[in-house]
Image 1 (tube, rainbow, N blue to C red):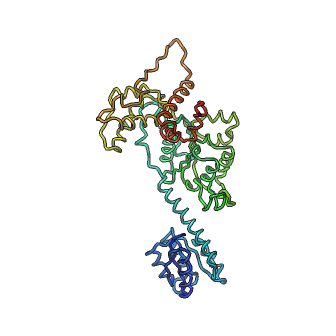
Image 2 (image 1 turned 180 degrees about the vertical axis):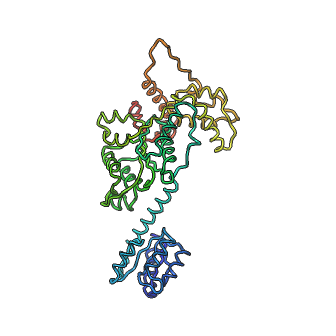
Length: 453
């Protein structure tokens, strides 16, 4: 039963008493006021969630009280109480900021429904405000480290495209830092003070993905007990980052294309067109052009998303950054753990020799595990995973052609996944967490490498 707080404002003492008792009986916390001036003071003192405000009050009228309350307590929802002869004025109150109005005498069950709807809107507004504050990332440039030519070229591209309000498709292998690139683009854009909203497309079932992206109305489907704004609404004015965009279904692709073209959409179960101003960044580790050729991904959506394409190089292609990044992670983890450990030259050499199929994410996990296992002040090769300790530098004959890189990557990734599965004793959830990917993505890779038992 609801314990929401209500301020009931009416100059009729008998009505106040009876209505307050009935509202308390069905579970609300109720305080009362007999005038607009008293209501304003009560709102300041008690900060109620809902105000039931009579339109006709002595002294400060209902509309004047409404204006003061909405100015001083923007999170409070106001429902106007009006007589049959004041409908036009009640409608005017909604324009000023009231949530709704009811005509007295109003059945208690109908009033309860209006209160519940007002509480739902209040919760949604608070959620949106919290997300707007929490999802605005800081400028990550200080933690975006590297010294290689490939890294500086990537930074130059980000610097050029960030101020341009265009869609960007960020491609690259798992673990290269595509989300970090997206956050840096947002931080350097004119939208940096607005939300940066991440959507894990591969982690959500199809039925949930559309609801998360576009929101739903109450009763739109089984379990939809409350209306909910979509993440496109939460990101309004800012940036939405669609991670693993290659995983979305044809149905969602069609809806997403419409949003990109018109900046409008409807809640699931809704009829009202909602307009948003959102910059779209997307990321994928899949070959989208090939998916287009296979008919798996819409060609028009691909061209719409890839106005600008940024390719994030794998860690092995910028091996000069391994030392810098490893030392950066050590410094960061030392602060987190309250330790003063360092990497030995032998450990760094082992890191340089490794192929890094899991890229930057794998390097972070390896360094973190080494610091945890190292009991002294210096990380030695024996603190690293066995695959790193016994790795040999890749030797390639000048007279023989190079082994195709894709085949080597597939073999390395399959071996890495097998090792993670063994370490987690076959638990897929723990394995996905260790690898830094979603369970859905892990399942796809297990199926691809015929590792499903």
